[in-house]
Image 1 (spheres, rainbow, N blue to C red):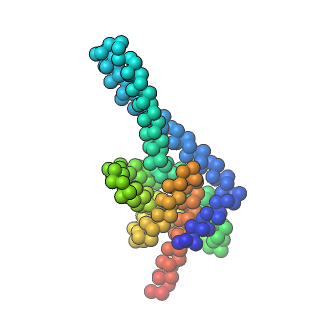
Image 2: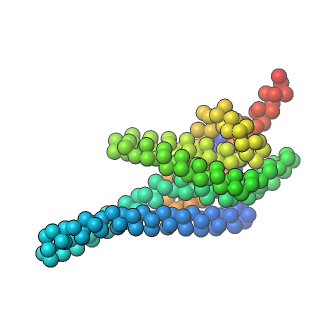
Image 3: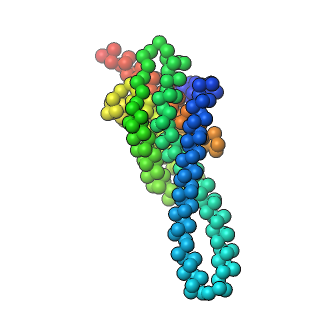
Length: 242
């Protein structure tokens, strides 16, 4: 598995991957900006009625304190949006991966598995559906994990494990669906859940690095392409010996 991670990291520096990197980073930044603007507008919409009510109830004397409070809230909102962007990054990269998964996998298979049959590209609609499902799953899992963040270091561990589960599942299924029907790919993931969860920890570690985590779709998809090849090879050997 470490060998797969090293191969994925080394190939990220290739000219072919740099072209995909620019597109995936651009899309990830655009999605994050849209989400942050939407959250900011929602929070402003929620707080504006309260400000208007206080001004009406107290009168002009409340304008000064409310201005200070508004400035403090703006700072808190900025920090909150930044924190939200960090938590949303795994979900965003899962969605971004659905647009570029086949392009990334193609480069990996041509570079490292040229003597084997190439995978078949997923229909864009299927890839996007899987990406959206993965992003929604990530959001649900993280919402469930948020209460544990108040438990100091234990909360960070829970969040890391949740990220490993979601990203391991997402990238493996995208890699496996190039060679197997959807149901079979998901069954393969369940059958090898412990291995894929361990592989997901590598991706969770990558996505935890600020700025660099914008390249998570490249690393995650390249890495899981190698992991799938290894699992599929072991499966073939087992069938041949039975």
